[in-house]
Length: 220
Image (cartoon, rainbow, N blue to C red; front, side, top):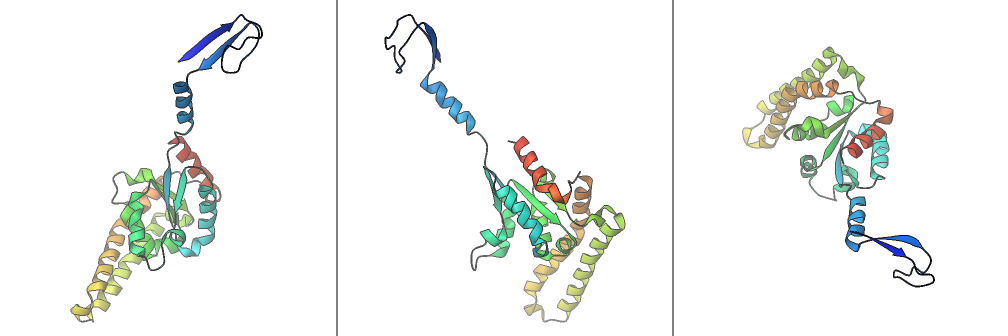
């Protein structure tokens, strides 16, 4: 509520330490001032999972440095958020709990089991396409033949491991069988993932962190 007080008295204190002549003095109520302060702090906290291959550490550092410096944004990253002797796989699964995920899509990334495991986890989320920011390094993915080569790569990885497992005692191969399932899943999902990535208007890798900031600010 706003109070409007006319001061017709000279040199008389009418409250709030105001002394003086014929003026209109407007006082905002305590509750209104509190509401305005609350409005200033309405920016919602956002968490971003940074998924990358260590070969692309320089790019990851640049993106991390920029976004981590912004208020209300927390970047989740392996070198910072996996404690000594803590589970790497549990950290990778936490990608689904974050508001957004950045994928630094390079050749090394697309051939990494751990990186693709993070992608597979994110793809379990409903409408995951709206939560991901591909940072495209490997421009070859815009060619359908190159996309097919990545599918073929994982099919070969699957077959190679399958052959190795056949030579082992089944009792000793249970752990490897889990990896075999992952390879099969990656091969089956690679086409869909790359289709989603190439369909996006991906910014130049040199300014991708700036564009990510703009999108997040617009979604506040």
